[in-house]
Image 1 (cartoon, rainbow, N blue to C red):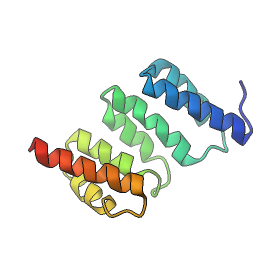
Image 2: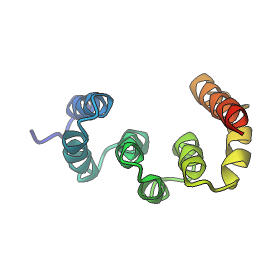
Image 3: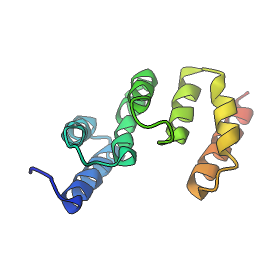
Image 4: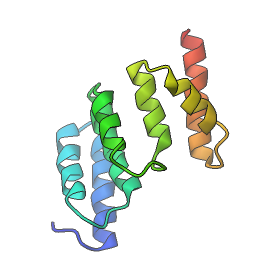
Length: 120
């Protein structure tokens, strides 16, 4: 498959996401590399691939990749990575995002903050 259209890219993202959910990380990574080789993929679609190193317990690699994307791309994933790394900056990032206009981001960050306070 040589994706060039938005539909082809969307299908590739869907397949990669499904592979991540099934924890078929080798397959997901192969699809992620295909996406990364394309020039017209939205950064938010590429960011989904950061779940691969996260699931491999390699949050530093995930954060390194996320930091190559535009600054405003997926701050919630960056906060998750800093949390997993034990970097105290995660709390500030998550607290800021807990008031986001994006309901999914707001919910995820509030859940992360609650989970952290229960674990303490």
